[in-house]
Image 1 (cartoon, rainbow, N blue to C red):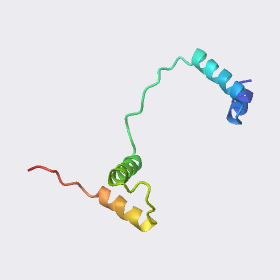
Image 2 (tube, rainbow, N blue to C red):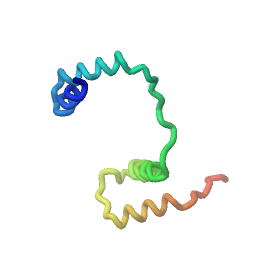
Image 3 (cartoon, rainbow, N blue to C red):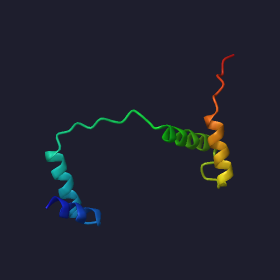
Amino acid sequence: MLLRLRKKALSGDSRALDRLILLAQAYNDEELVPSTSLSNDDADLLQIYEARVLSGAATAFHSPKNIEESVENLRRPRRSKSN
């Protein structure tokens, strides 16, 4: 029954989705804990995204070569900004 309900919900049946969510809320007694660890690849992607957003380039087109250069620049050790 649950598998059929899940299949209907995933195919776009909003009634099935509502019922599936209600069942999950009623019978899922696990407490949700946010993940605090990132893989190195995820951390690299987030750094690239942050740099692109802050530079205003998030909407601009970048060639694969430019993206590879960005990744290499982010992997280099950063110099501290101490004066």
